Length: 296
Ligand SMILES: Nc1nc2c(ncn2[C@@H]2O[C@H](COP(=O)(O)OP(=O)(O)OP(=O)(O)O)[C@@H](O)[C@H]2O)c(=O)[nH]1
Ligand SMILES: [Zn+2]
Image (cartoon, rainbow, N blue to C red; front, side):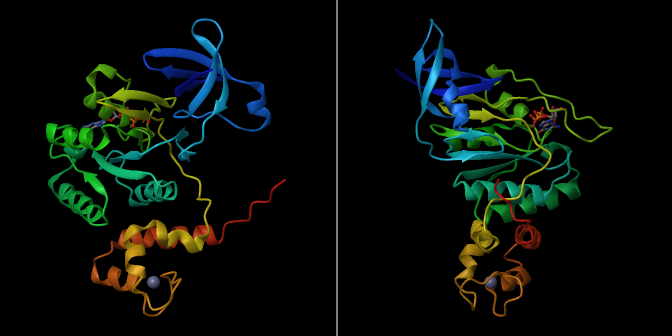
């Protein structure tokens, strides 16, 4: 039996890396019966069949896993966030951040396409970056597209870790990775102007070795599922709400209609972003009113 890590998954095959060697494996039939799908990032035990082929026998316990993108054992996530083209969406960013908080994966927000901003847009977006930094999140807002300072900051943050890069289709994930590690030469796509939708250049999830770290490039997405959490827990996935809530008058304050709510006070005072609070209320209502999922 040999141990390795799944770097890539394609049509039922899993490429398992052991040092420099790659084995093309399949999962054994009983995984399917037990409804277990191996994920990119999984550490597995497998049996070598021929020289470079094999069967996965066992998936080792996962530290964590994400549904979208489907990866396992991730330390931190680079959230590629378009400043423009497509327009910055605080709702999309906050949803990604909440998903990561739920999975206990550290987010790093990287703004792309800051070079395309007009002066006014630049001021608005760089203020937004500052506000996210205060939450606090690691935020990289490049002065020039792919300047050395931003790339080096990112390289330092992800060295020695297992990372994932995520973000809306067309956000610039593959382009960013190509700048980080020019040897990768990943395909990138022009955004279709007519549809204003990305072309979905990246079709699969794959791990790449980049500057002493591992990174998963992932396909973009256009929508998000709602989260599998209790609506009363939602506030705890907003670090700045969680911090403020110790000063709310009521324990278990939902920060909606309660008097003496510190979160609402800080929204009025401008120390909590209004957009974050609005996104919170919207999600809170969505999750609260969600139809129960009946198990068959
Ligand atoms: N001006 C500018 N263009 C960028 C930047 N980043 C990406 N682009 C362009 O945006 C388009 C989409 O970039 P991709 O890297 O393919 O985007 P992606 O997020 O990997 O997209 P999917 O693979 O579909 O998920 C390409 O035409 C890139 O050249 C940037 O910082 N500045
Ligand atoms: Zn409150």
